[in-house]
Length: 456
Image (cartoon, rainbow, N blue to C red; front, side, top):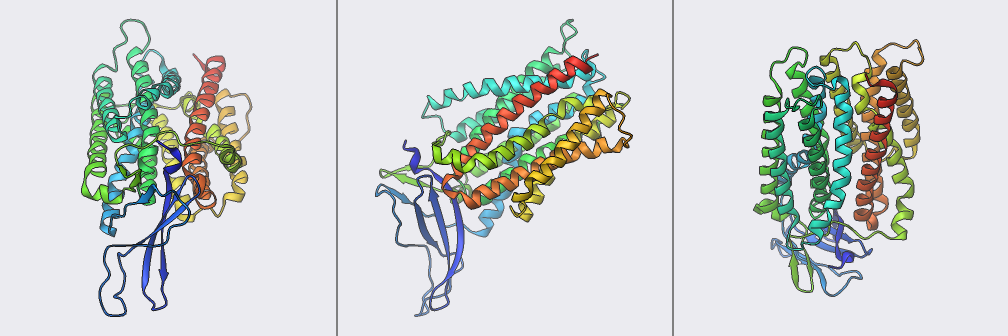
């Protein structure tokens, strides 16, 4: 398939003609830089003769291949609202399993042989799972008949299976003083989550931009759901054990799976999808997972992606260190810290979505503040220096390292969408890769710090 024919973004704009009639145009930008415009009459007035308009009306096309054409499908605001609700649940499904493992660390510190080091074991397993899953992506590339939506359904079912296994066997250590079940299933959760994230990226890209925002919001709130259920569990004096905790998570994943099937196969979902006709063939079930990357893309994305790398590196340093922020904290307090961390990113992302990319040029300022908080948290863990600052700054720092990451990464995405529409798909994919690199580098850094200074 020619990657140059992939749609990388779309916008709806309003224009009025000389008679004052309002049109709504759906403009589609391809990764090759061409642009196409279709007139979508959702709310158009009658014409000069009083006859109502309906359907699609083609406008002049601007420089694109003869074999490529847009097939218009009319959608309504109701379709968009239903689609956003579905894609909210679709968005949190790839992330909620890993977030659930992280949130449950507060319980496991008192119920596993590793104690506080169980968080390090889990995050290290995540890293290895993420790396292995990148090689696993070769399999769907070698199987053109395997569509994105079928792969995502299979991954959701795998996530459900992992939930049931961890719920039943979480306390099995096989007399080795090592929580092998938790570690192995963390590895699988990391791999499944990463493949789901990469596949979901290309799948959502074939829908209208409102669905992208909805799925991103759902991805952020997956941490909130996991954290809240961990707090309600009360790890110090449990109201319920991991069996029920992960059954609740499984129910949320099942809701996400149902929402995904509605978005992928229902009429409403079909109406919201962008269709491309290439060589008179409808490609509505398979999207390319790896957009073309060229020198222009790297030049356009160098500075924004550097900012993203910076913010993510600082934020990913924190999760394994949370159990060590205060060795006298109860598991309940650890649960609060993890929830603050998991809550920060979605709130930051939501705030940035509301404001836009107006603060893009001052990102470095918030980056310095985020770095200060991370250094303070690291010093608090090591107990190397008494800064004479109140301990509540640890809670504030835990929240704001994640909040600033969520705010700035969303701001960067909006900036790229506004300034580099022709490279949107490629830069979005590069951002996913940057996120994986940051995750690997910083989680391993945290692991080395804990092994060298904190492990006991």
